Image (cartoon, rainbow, N blue to C red):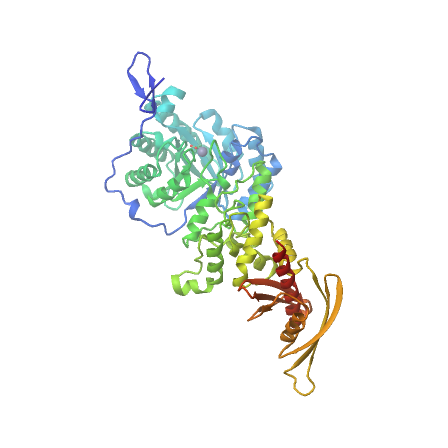
Length: 576
Ligand code: KIV
Ligand code: ZN
């Protein structure tokens, strides 16, 4: 092998060198309609977790696990569920039988069994569905030139003969099961690598041979991107072309089945739906061969985010994700759309700030934007997915001051006033730099406590007793007991309120000079457990402002504790 301008080439034996990779050509469809369409309704969904998904697991599911997953899929709302490949595995056969024999299939759910277009496998597959109320027999055969030449050594005519011979058996076998509503699905495997005219010919032949399709009980034509060899727009062109050219379009359901080799299965499926497909096969979180099948969680939630009712219930996605992780033994990636741990989390300061503002102004969204949910950096509401206690904001060295305030507010109900955010931000930044990792919520609260609420320092309040003047209740006499540098002191002073009397009393004790213009107070908690919090800015002579925070059941006592905390912080700062 050699390289030409960075592109590898491979010598054919005795032939000229050809490029190793060549861009796939697509059909000519200059009047394609799909780019100007908008998706308005959800497709029919078919879960292939128990077949395509299961066959690609390092440790396939055992019968109990299969049953658990089947029930989960029903609960989510799937009406078509491919449950196995009964002719290929005894285990699959018995687990399909168990669903039927033990009455696990809810009304309205079709279970689907897969089979190759090989006569000797069909009987066993029909047997797997015996007695089922609603079933789908799914037959597939690879139709690509690549498969026909390199794998089966068949020509197109031989392939069509094999397909129709198999379908004749399926047709006759299902006709002998009149008590069951058994539909038929055919997949030309590697459809996207198949000559489109040939794929159409095979599918027409399959349709004719089945001969039982009606608009009410359509045959399913599943057109797979078995390997993602093309860009998404090609898939859409192929589907639109196929839908336009299939003779009895109203008697077939056009189904998509994409794999994710180039990471675009969701995009390809969305475009192919625009192109006219009716149904989607895929798996939860994209399990399946190699890079997996299309991820139905992402796809369905994308549609939902555009206001489409998908019929699938992902309102408890954490539980679904936990179940799939446990059953498959494979963790879900942190950044997996909708389900990953970090997908609704902002670490960076500017994102945190924007989210906080957007969340606070959420009730203005309908008027301003004509939709109920419009929040910076969050395209959907995590609560819709059951992520109720979502950590929208997490703290590390990249986080801003607003992020720490948000976490304190969300987790502890603390309304840190805006002017205090920079001081809080610096303290958090120092800690984050020191530990070099994410800071957990409890650590943040501990920092808030040790830095602002109960800082070490020379002052320790023993008690403060404010009393209104007997003649003029607007005048307050305050008596203060405090330890300063280990020495207990008692002082009294007057003021036009409890806090001003306290400030005057403290100023007799050789504290740094300070004034208080205004301070923020709030109630935290409910009922008898309600506590008052005070956030008091001490303004020093040089214009510096240092905050102290106090808590107490009484708001005036909270304020004086905040002043003591603030003075300790001033002293600590002066020592540095
Ligand atoms: O990917 C594929 O083509 C398949 C077929 C069996 C439908 O899984
Ligand atoms: Zn597949």
